[in-house]
Length: 261
Image 1 (cartoon, rainbow, N blue to C red):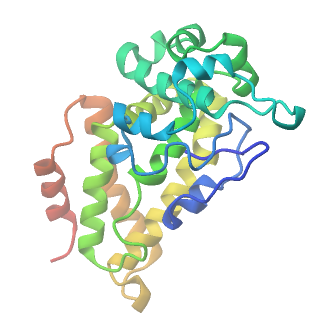
Image 2 (cartoon, rainbow, N blue to C red; image 1 turned 90 degrees about the vertical axis):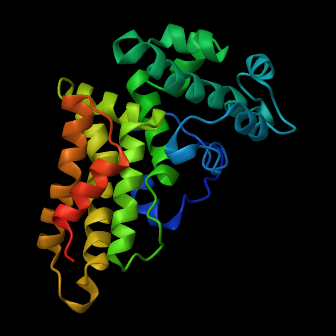
């Protein structure tokens, strides 16, 4: 998840996902690339306690973050990185525990150990916090297995990665929650599509085409888009409608049905 950085510099996420993270979108909270995109999450999922401790190496614990909610470097109002990370971590943890409806700014503030007013200085709503979590986690959780995929095996590996992200990872629960809320809220729909989903699809269509011979003209962009829809739609249906696990056997059966050879 990478949003606009204030008073700092954001190193790009993995090259494959740069276009997604860089898409213009309504301003939400900012975060630095060094924050949670260092491979400390399994398939875009929740960071382990050890990983979170490593993030704060030599800097701040959660209680330290409370003491320094707003850093005063150079007299500016730069937010405390440790407090910001505490909010991001608390939000996706609470989403898994209490669901979207049960998630509140008050609850996030209490879990993160920061003042509610601090959160509102950084984000407009819980949707914006969740969106920032999604973009940052997807930069690693939805990365393709190869920087320049060119083989059907790369497509198979990516679909398994996508299924694990959507169906099991806490970051996937964030995506599910935002997709559901987007059906009722126009701002969430715009944020999700303009800031994430449209670029994700464009990247995945291009890579799907490359995996199936698009570079030699054997597979067109329209064909790749149709195939990608045929592969991803059952995953979304199974996760969002049927509420059933996206197990590897199901993904393999889906791939065997649609991929040539």
